[in-house]
Image (cartoon, rainbow, N blue to C red):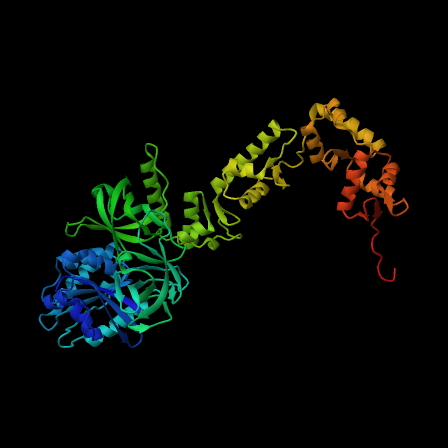
Length: 616
């Protein structure tokens, strides 16, 4: 399916034109038909040879209903710009075209109606000249179509032109996240609440769980809703893929809970923001502080803060699901023709707390605009990472970016991939410097425990998670082991206490099971911290709570116990090891725990012999 919107001055025959194309009535309300004036949006469709189903969004032309017109035009990828042959270019034609150009709609068709009432040539020539100056310039280079919906003149030519237009439209990705701007909400007896909108990208299926964003507070997740049923072009569908007009039946949602300007979203895939930075089509200083932002079918009051040149910060009265590169319109309510286009630059802008930060921020946004004018998706992602310092995969998804565009083998040296995060090179270097400084400070301040715990390192440097910290440590040439990080070769140092430890080590070398007692260690200057350092460096091994032996002590004990008659008693083991019960009992329990000995009963153990291979 393809979706086209109409545009043009009031009473120039837009509704009559789509009625003639489709055989359907676009004006839904009795007062519209009675007055011959489109007030709200209308939706009709037809099937054209060569392109399939085509849906039309018929918008009102009267200036009093400009908000309704923008709601219909916003989500549409292409437009039929309608001019009457007998009246030519008029005020609302200009305003509608300005809205089209503000949204940067590039696909369209010029249609001159009422060719039976006047020569359509002058109207077509004037329209072509005006359209050639804006985003619809390609339409000005096409022949355009002159028709009479009353006599049928040119209608076959119009159908062929619409087919060519539809075939030129880009195809959106069916895998993209859904953002369906609601333009109508009503109830159907027996079904409940139904909302309609133009599906610009992605797909919706019966049973899907979506988020209804209706702007309760910035950053909220909105209301979770379930798709009970789907219709498109008047037929029930199990699934609808963009582009399409779609009616969505929502389970368990009262109709008063949803309105035009709300949006159905892929759950967890869109941020809601009430603060954004934008690049405008005119200098920000030329605009008043209070404006209305039109995006999709939504219209939200905003407060504008100029930054620099065409850059501005917008505070929204209600949060909206937006992403960088979204086109939108700013309008002065009540002032005819007072609208300008803008593009969203950042939906999570940094705070501006210091003097001059606003101007610097604006200069950067405008500099990025020039860089991104013809940039690839990967370049746009790299720019976003550089702007923020780092970006997680989920954050990139919320911004409408694909983190995999900068994979591990990316040639872009400005971005570092670390786990689930992309980090700018400048931030990566700063993190390395801060981590090295933290590691060196720890080693200098705590020689007995010189390695920095990973949790403390993460908090000190400000990295998002331990996986990133480990990647950072390796890049900085540091070693990570046992939940700690430090420079290679750095180990606990006992300083003056090393002399006392050497005496203990010499004694154990002569008498392997003559473990020193607590008072002996204190007399040698070995307190709990010094002992812990000796254990951490592998000079001693702790058996039980208070028995210290050489690291090879358990293996030496096994060689002695293996020479005893099996099984043996604790007393026999103590005598063979030439030690005390204080040492023998925890040592035997240690050997039991390692599976080297086995306790048979309260008084006997045996050495566990390795199993012999069959036939051995």
